[in-house]
Amino acid sequence: MSILPRILLALLLITSASSLALAAAVPAPVPVPVPTPPPTLTPTTTATQPEKPSGPAVILAGVILLGLGLLGAALAGVFRPGSIAGPWRLPPGSPVFPILLILVIGGGCWIGGQVAFFAIRAYQHARATGGEHFSTEHLTASDLALVATLPSLVAMLIVLAGDLMAGLWRPIGITLARLPRRIVTGVIGGVIAMLLIFGASSLLGAFYDWIHFKHPSEHEMLAAMKEASPIAKMILVFGACVMAPLFEELLFRGHMQTLLVRLMSGRSALAPPAPEGMTVIVPPFDAPPGIVRDSMLPPVGHVLPMPPPIEYEPPPRIEYAALASGGSVGARWLAVIITSIVFALVHPLWTAPLIFLLSVCLGYAYERTGSLWVPIVMHALFNISSTFLFLNFV
Image (cartoon, rainbow, N blue to C red; front, side):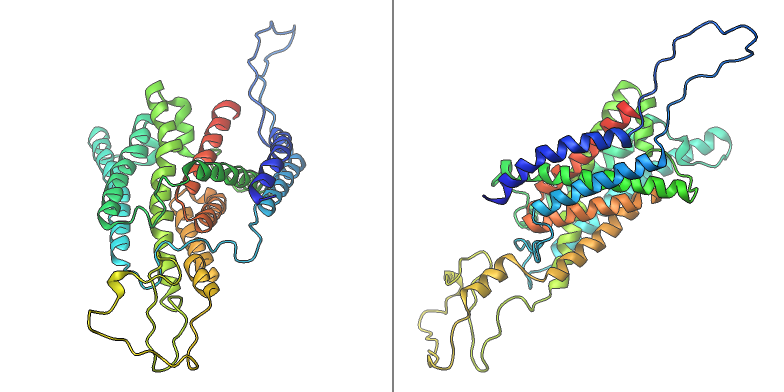
């Protein structure tokens, strides 16, 4: 039985067991108080407060969720040596300037758009209040909805246009080939990632309580959703569940991680070394083994000297196969780690450990499959579930 049916069979067990653990990890909704007359000689009454899960219950829930996530990862073959080495996107030796330029322009437009928006709001606030200091607390829900969507949308369009002109859509994995299978893979990977992150979130929350570390109870965008108007809430949900997965995966995984893998792979993986004094014509990476394109043939009238058969044997087919769909496992993992550190740093500091774990899951899935749709679906599934849980149970 292939790995995909085994994962689908185990998914039912994982999902049912995780629902019990989530019930212990997520606080119960606040009950609606029913007004009753106060008893005689009682000066005041207090409103019912939501009960926070106890420390042992949170830790137990975290351990269960982590165990289920690790089980799903094992079934998916994550711990198999070299499983991260998927298809090449930018083969060693290919030019890096186009993807580097697009990464710098796209990231600059994204960050620059947010900085410009905050600068305008700070100037307007200073004029209205006579120079009072401006902070993110002065932003309204409508402001957060705008800054969460407009800079990302503009930057994403610029990046996609640059990729189209540079011919990078296919190399970074933006294709419709086998899209339904990629979506299924993303859903399975998203469930595994959610189990790991929700479990780690429970343990991290218990650790924060133990060291008495005070932090916001939710992301500022999630907090704004409850106070926003219906239109602003729709824009915030769209920004969190659609725009963030699309643009952040395009920028961080599709460009930054791909560029890092290319730079760290060098040129050593291009081909096996040829014997001294011999010249070997190696087919391009998108050509089958043993096939040489017409553009690589010598000019008419030029005859290549034939080497003595006893002095040289062609490289085994397996070496070219490893070349086409492998590469340095260490370089890929290092690229995932560096990208995840940068990805975590652009989020609130108290969420950095969880964001880093999420990014590692996304980066691994991207390297293994070579398709950008897989981390996009995983990211969207995580954001949708987090938003749903916050709006309905917190």
